[in-house]
Image (cartoon, rainbow, N blue to C red):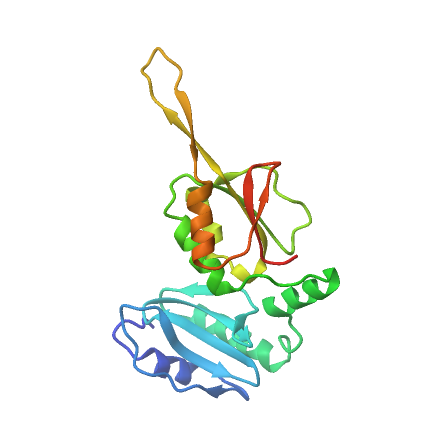
Length: 228
């Protein structure tokens, strides 16, 4: 039962038992964008299918946050429908009623550790988007759920997780004030290590977005606290 060329919403409505959930009206979709294709809702909980008719994923949300594994599909066959129905049956049975969302976990951790918030998601995105233009910039960061602090810096260029992670979980971010770059001098000579100072450039970005920071002399870094 391939969905290509067929109405995905009608297929799911005709083949899934929504139990006490009700189908959410879905507006016309742009084929070039990943968007919600189908959704059943309960009070505060939803079963959501997102993507395109021929490719996408589905999961359970609570208060608009994913609280289940996300499964992908390439066609709506019997196995896919079976997994979808099982998730709907779990919702109906109350499995997700008391499931903690990421926001719940963050709130609980902040209260237990008596932390105060100093950043928001918008400022984190503005900051990370701007410093990403500085090539090979050394960074390190810690989220509020980690017990151990990272010891070494790594380059922002090679960190895909920071770009995609929920920024509200960042406890602090350290940005090195220098970048070490190797200069190739030939096959018979060791590369020369040049140190590029970027403190002024990073501080300019921080001031542009009115982000508070402190300078740490121990590792020559600028520290931005999400929570403290």
